[in-house]
Image 1 (tube, one colour):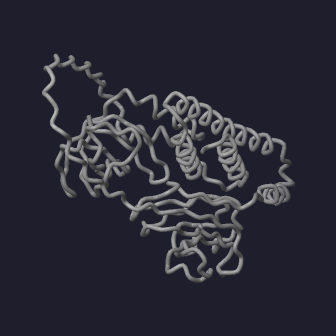
Image 2 (cartoon, rainbow, N blue to C red):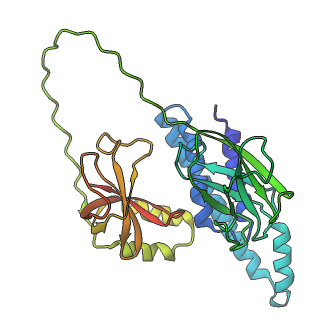
Length: 333
């Protein structure tokens, strides 16, 4: 059962992560959004879920804007001669309890998942590992990455996210270490990889008398979208000029009533997943490629037959921008 405290904990984690001067909002906010969406999906009824979603997004936007405003006020008051001391004090104030959270909360077998973290040591050799419960800190079986996102030391991060390959079904421990060793364990959490549900055979229904044919309802008229003059490159360029995640989200939502035309060479195909998919797209694929050097994913109907390497003409509506994978998501019209 989801409680109000679960939402408060998510808001607090986002607030703490943004206290780090080097925090990347575009990397952290999508993970927090997805975590909050998981909580909302457990609430009863669409009306309650929509109300909770609106309140949650407003609160996350408020935290983001409040943090930005505070940083600007501190920067204005900071004397130039005290810059070094101010940076030291900011680092001290930025210390927050280390936290880990997994997105999605219970990944499916073989599906990639991300581990969000905050309050790390700041050492670029800090690392995150995936372990079987009860195993030693050195028994990660190669399932680990530095906080920079790979098995090569990179950028030092106090907060961010690391992506891992899919796992077999079962329970796992996620552990954050503050340096290149096995002794400085900062925090840990656990997750369960859900097995793929095998469909149960449906019992054969008993024969029923044929009902009298009813007149078929007239189909609702489809809403025709106007083709926009903006290209995907134009959208990406304008998105880069926006600083706050809330501003970016509202800009993308403002384009939801427009249609985009473009050619896409399919480089990769993934099963389309998500909550509330229509019958046209349930069980279908998402085609992934690039348009003018920009990552694009297009949900296609389950009746459309394409393959990797095909080049297709697409007329689609914009759904969202996934900053974690730097990709625009569209739905085929």
